[in-house]
Amino acid sequence: MTTLEFDYVIVGGGSAGATLAGRLSEDPATTVCLLEAGGPDKSVLIHAPVGVVAMMPTKINNWAFQTVPQKGLNGRTGYQPRGKTLGGSSSINAMVYVRGDRWDYDHWAALGNEGWSYDEVLPLFRRSEHNEQFDDAFHGQGGPLNVTYPRHTSPLNQMFLDAAALNGVGLNADYNGVRQEGAFMYQVTHRNGERCSSAKAFLTPHLGRPNLHVVTHALSTRILLRGRRATGVEYLQGNAGKRVTARREVIVSSGAFGSPQLLLLSGIGPAAELQAMGIPVAQHLPGVGKNLQDHIDYVQAWRAPSDTQTFGVSLRGTAKMTAAIFEWRKQRSGMLTSNFAESGAFICSRREHSRPDLQLHFILAIVDDHGRKIHAGHGISCHVNVMRPYSRGQVSLRSREARDAPVIDPNFLADERDLQLLLRGGQLQQRIIESSPFDGARGDMIYPVRADDAAAMTEDIRNRADTQYHPAGTCKMGPASDPMAVLDARLRVRGIDGLRVADASVMPTLIGGNTNAPSIMVGEKAAQMVREDARHA
Image (cartoon, rainbow, N blue to C red; front, side, top):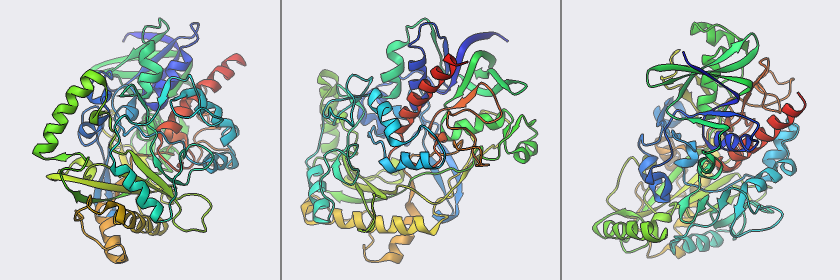
């Protein structure tokens, strides 16, 4: 078996992993190997923002995982799309740039994670960012991650903002600034009318660096250990087994599902579960795969006249999209630059709350079952999700084979408080969309339910709610006093030298908002800590 050696081996080229590889390889004296299970990020479906509609419901650049049947969702099996290409989920997501609330990071620090308060992570967000609209204490200039507004914006977004205001949700020009609450146009990770994924920002511009070695179609199967030290990674390319060794560290950045799976396959996790699988126990860590949190999401959709500026299945819509293809190819403008979720809001379920606990995404199309169920004609949708869910799930092994998808159990709505919050959110978003600004642009509901019929809406939630695509927490960081903490605050795996995890799985609690920007921040933070620890070694 051929073995190559580097200073650092990173498993996973997603939001955090691509960031980490790009940052560490800035030092020409440091050698970095990045292993990515998917392929290069060359597809036009990645680069054209509207391509998300083709990738999200399919296996194109997508792991397309399934959950176990969810008791809280009337026994339904949920869907969990995850990016399988350079850039990971930042290459297939809706590109909205959301950091979360100041409270989220101060809460992490209060849990015993030194260095993770809002004031300490804000410089990392700013370091990554080049914001085309905001240049202030909250936003960065000159960073590799371009943040701006979509070049295409439908007039229906103004209807949403006006309707939100009629329902007590005022305009907030910058939800990543002083305060989060309010309605707004989403900031997105675009550059010149194209998607700006973590790979396009931090990695692919630097593939010519002689100290950066990127291996695609490389499925990592096991972390190599010598005693209690990580020394490398075994992986598969096709059916060929290969390995790469790390002089300094192995860093796992395979996401909230992939990272715990690889640790478990390597004998790091709950001893009883490993023994039941016939995997020798290298380090008993009961928290590996536990603490899974995800934003439970409820979508309501309405039909709309075909002449409104929405996306849909119609002769007129097909003609518009055909013209838009040529416009995008020539000018990188027009409808193909839309991310569909152009506007939204952070709202408080109760007036007395001090911070938002519900998030809305207003969508310029009918969305049903993650886009897997197509409706003829045009329409609009609105998503609402519970920002800080109380329910906790887990990720475990299906088998000892890395090719087999992990067992994913989000345990959605196991805590009654999540259901009550989502019900409240569904009622609020329905009142917004059914307000007067949408008169003439809003037709019948796809799944009719009255906002004041709590029982009917509760049943509709259980029948149709699912993920908002933000799984986190399965390798959480925490103090030594927390027996379920997998990592310390420097993202080092407890009991194993030379091994870290850096991605959304490290979050002790899910942040209030989309997780791509925070995952990129985790990559920035990990690179900073790796460099510091190397200097002091």
